Length: 201
Image (cartoon, rainbow, N blue to C red; front, top):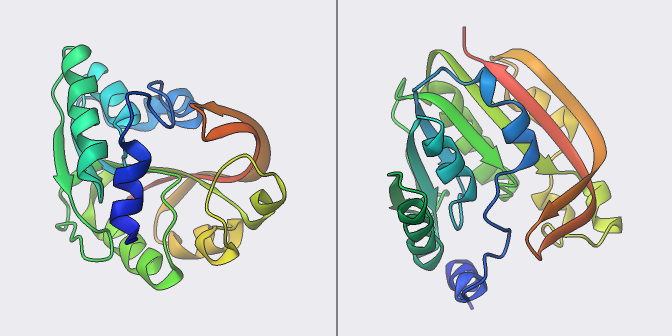
């Protein structure tokens, strides 16, 4: 089964795999995003973060490899009376235009190292001056938790790799920690994460 079909299968239920509420780290730090700005949500899945941002007045573009996931994202947006733009794309091939977004959201967007490095470079270039990145991802310590996330170390992120990838952004927040994560059925329990907020200046 291809990676894309795997995600289509995962999302092909009435339930939302990661719930319909936004990621806590994003919710707690929404004030760092330029008000009313154009926001790109990477690996957005079924739309919980995109819809949350749209409800707060942002112009949201949600990208994911799963057609099924993004169809559910549009349904969730309709139910909340907001609009989002969805793009079905493999992030290994997706291109972010330079200076095109006021914010980028990367929540549990786990990719092979070469793909991640390319995408993170595009994130920096794609932010407008004053734009903000909000990122949370699992670290290799998550492999010992059994509470969600990819099954292999190479898809994880560390404080060092995130710091290196985004050294050209002004660092607002950088932390490697464990916290309780309650997001649907697939992210439930103690999670080992790295968090980053950076601004393009």
